[in-house]
Image 1: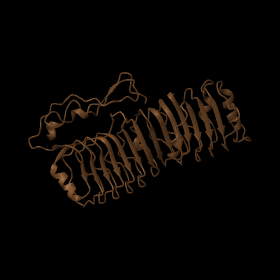
Image 2: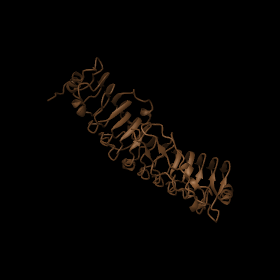
Image 3: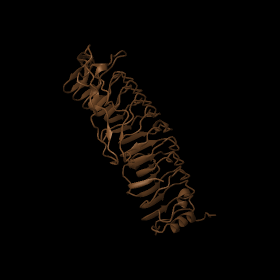
Image 4: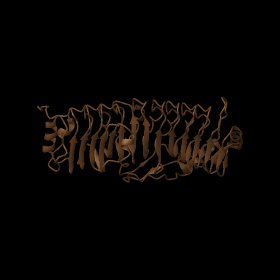
Length: 403
């Protein structure tokens, strides 16, 4: 049974909070420090950015809590320097100056934009932390992110934007934490390999946004992601969501638009905000069986259709041109309303017909489903004691019979 915390479900064509006892993320580096290895900080390495503690039962109030210093000591060779302020790179000369600085940490923003990279560009092999934003934008000649083999933390927004030759994110293998990841308008990016090290994001508003990458055909690279406060992925060339199979908890919103026929492969358990699932090819709701709590559930044939959040506590299944069955829809206790409309191939209400009589607490609107027997609609309406169709259940198949 899926429980709703002031929640809704909206299905149109297109978190559970941590346990009451709380949870300490296993991926945190709080107890060990890294300075002894890289010599990047003589007083304890990266402990201040690791060790994320999740207070129990708070839902969305996840805050990064600095861990105890690991007590590492600076490396003898001086593997890197703390570089104060921002760094801006717009050509290869700027990039060489940045290499020469041998920064282990940049306290401000790092922007690398409009650079024409060669085939043998050396890496920023000492850089582990960018405390502010990191922008990699409008480059040419950059096919991967092998420039950043040691990068672990981006404290602000990590923008990967409009890089004309970027085919993969490989090279980010050390990345563990960021405030927000935005991967947008990279025309030849085909997968997300390189993000395997990201498992649990602890910053309170951390999020991942991956949109407008027309060649992106696989979510490979996200398979180790377990929890993130917010996710938006728009990738219609993706035909399988198995790459998100490790994702269990999203305290905020999750919007996913792909080209799959179902969402088989998902193992989601809790979504604190809106769960928006979208595909123009959707034929079934398979993939939602593990869902135990959701704020709202939206399934539409375009990501734009999910932009207006559904009314809290409602279930809407609307404008799904290929959807034939509601099989896979988990049991939903007490939705405020049910709206099912404009589903050209839907032939049965399926699991809704077995809902208890007091399930729907407000309104029912089931209309314009030309293959859905009106007698099923009438039976569902009659069975619900606290809600009724009134004049909002029409345009279905009036000639079909019900056994």
